[in-house]
Length: 428
Image 1 (cartoon, helix red, strand yellow):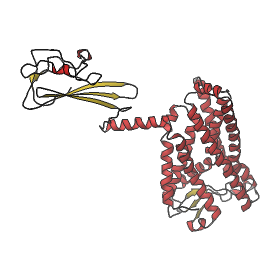
Image 2 (image 1 turned 45 degrees about the vertical axis):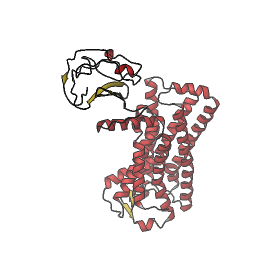
Image 3 (image 1 turned 90 degrees about the horizontal axis):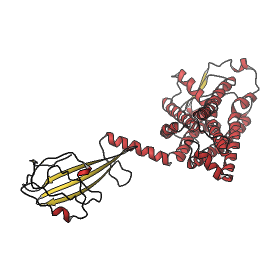
Image 4 (image 1 turned 90 degrees about the vertical axis):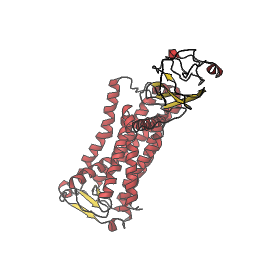
């Protein structure tokens, strides 16, 4: 089934954003296989989204170099996502069977190299193998853009079509082994995960679910393509020279031609929409996890602080305030305590706002706040028992603040004031 090109453009860019969002903190946790999954899937969504815009309603060969790069990435994507799933299942299986726990930097580097050899090395080998059975440089489909070209020969099934099925089968073996071991030896499995940096029980389960979902899509889809291409007809292999005799040729196909061919529609639409599906599935498993919500909150607080917007919540907010109004002889004190919670530290600052009612203009001198100068009171009445003389209501050297129980402070008696008169609001 063929969908309007604009719909795919929107979903492809959404898929790219969904893959790029959690990439940063997965890189920090040394999750190489998961990062490769996001990179390959996001790159595929980005390229196909760009192609759907550039070649919308046209099939012009406007960027040959870009088309070469795009089609080579398409060839790599034939095995890249299954290879990433293999890396994930392989690591989970080793942890489940107590064969690997990354406790040293050397172990981590070794695991990274192994994941790169599988997640990047296999796609590179696929690009080399596909060139053997490629009859021309690439094809350009209207509304779709450039697409890889292969000729259906017996060698093509070995060098191109069979790779996803073979990788998916090996990955399935690792996945079943890790799941079985996980449920059989749960206690030992938890101990192994405690020594593995960046891998908790919930993340392990999500990785298993992601890999199992990918396997359930890779193997059946690969078998379906093999069967349909075999039924369409297989051309005998006639040698390297015959196959590459017109390799520099670029075939351009109008939309009314390929959209009226059900098999061609299935191949093209299934290829590009499967990338979007992988992006949404990945985000469904990892985009709403605890660590993801923590990073979203940090980004939100960072943006809010940059634009000067303060949030006030009771739990987990960056600014928590409490105010207590106090009135005595026409003088109103509004005392505010502000607590700012940063990423790894909590900083408390006290601000006192003093407003005056009527025509009273007190004289006082404001000094820097010091917690040692606070005398807590257990009742409000003690505040009103302070004897005030003249126009001054505060003794010199005392900063009003909010006690821990949000009760107005008790101020010791003073008869003289060194504060100068100022009508308005005092802020420290």
